[in-house]
Image (cartoon, rainbow, N blue to C red; front, side, top):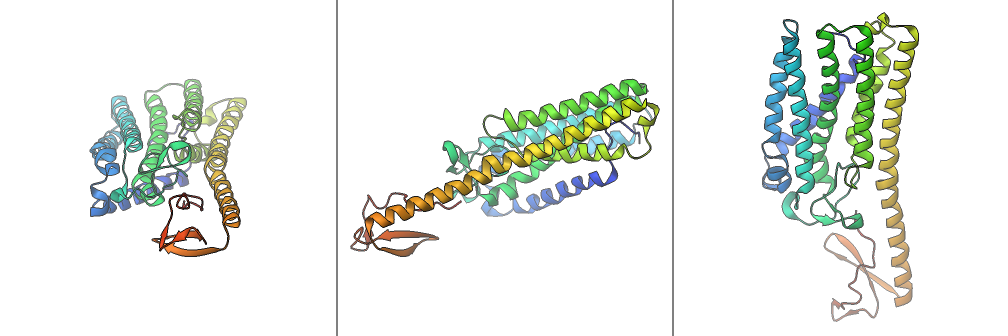
Length: 315
């Protein structure tokens, strides 16, 4: 209803459709017996998702009434802040869970997770969840948390606009919001307990990128001096590209690149061990191929020494 400094272009709101799509998928998945009794759902999500849905519903109702009173806009903003808090609570609770889907204890992945913990020991002793668990049970709430924080910042600016503050004050509030978004990104990437979150900063990056594009369209910033508009636009672009670039870089450097190097090292170590032991016979043990050196496979059983994990691990 009101234009603010950080109001993004319309295409940015496609993010909300993606959020709801993944949460619809979660809604069906968590009904399945394989997932419904896991700690990720029972203790991780618990009733916080329901609380967030109620707060979101009430926020939308008050937002529609903001034309009548600035207090309606303020209530809407506070409720959106509550949604953000509930989403972050879910991520914290899921990070603290000790078991995953089916309690299988299978090897998981840290790539793209907000904070990795769960069924198996991962890099550096940090427990991880499987990719299946992450994408179905955790990723939707990472998306929603990033989007809720973005909308909270937008709604906060909107509340001041509804309150009738001048363009200069709006410019300062907009600049403060961008700096705050950058601070949240830094916290998620560098000060998140050693377990970076890459999704929330990336969502914030897309939101601010949409805000940067909105400077090309007519809006309230036209009431500001030219140098102020240029400064705000440059700040928005720098914050957006920095957050997006940092998220992608650290995701690759901390997760994908390390996994690739670990797999290559494990493969080389496996080949060296096989070369030292002799000719290799390969059999299928469950779902994982296990290399068995001749002389170590006695009486249909592998001795304890050769049963050590010399081979490549499944990621």
